Length: 115
Ligand SMILES: [Zn+2]
View: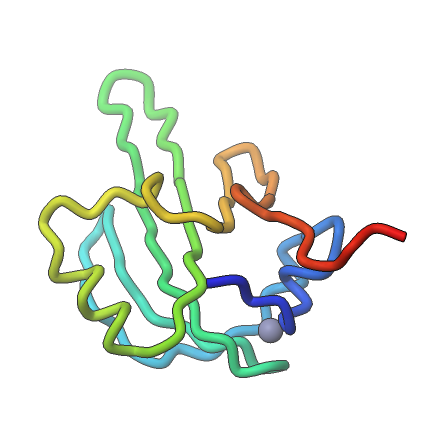
């Protein structure tokens, strides 16, 4: 789904400060891997949060990958969490937070006609 009312969708450049979320439900939690449903405090949009920490046992260069997928209902997030073959790359649009700190949408399309 396209969260077109959300500032995270409409803003061109996103930073850490743009994330104003409240936790709705923790679906799965471990030291290196989390699934949480968050709600945007500004517009109420639900997001499925996928946290994955890639542990570098040899060099200690651990990397954290975060993906947010906009969802329309809590049940949708529960289904995602229950799917053993869940791959975040299968979801579009999705909001990525990369280890280098960059935050950007994949699959973002303009739903407004260019003038
Ligand atoms: Zn929002």
